[in-house]
Image 1 (cartoon, rainbow, N blue to C red):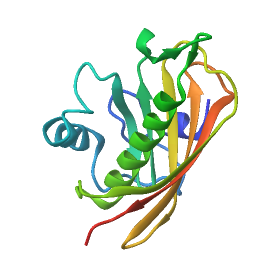
Image 2: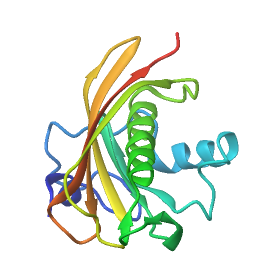
Image 3: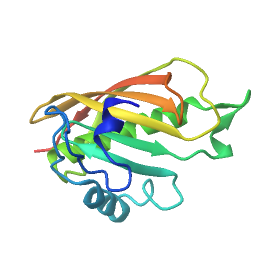
Image 4: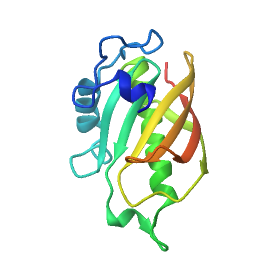
Length: 163
């Protein structure tokens, strides 16, 4: 179990008793962020998209992409674009959870390393913002196949934050 999993509950995505002092509650709580994304960004965040926000905190989040056969490429592995999209979604959620509702925050850079073949199951991404400034946010994302400890991909990205 990761430090994040131990500190946060899945259902409510809220801070548990005894939480590490470095993991603070998010500026924009999970349920409020999910509701705003459903209304304002329905082309990505809708009931059948497979995306869910498991937990948010100041400077990070944990998101999930449900498995679907259309994510597979030849050879039976989950496609690179599916992993990259999850990394970008995770960074977007981490940024918004940390700064509040600024939906015009945009990706300015995203780089990913594919580390091993993902299992054909849900993907889970844990995001950590490394720097959160007034105009830019820089973060990293570790993606695992659900139930497995070893990462399948690691991404870094930068978001531009509007004034």
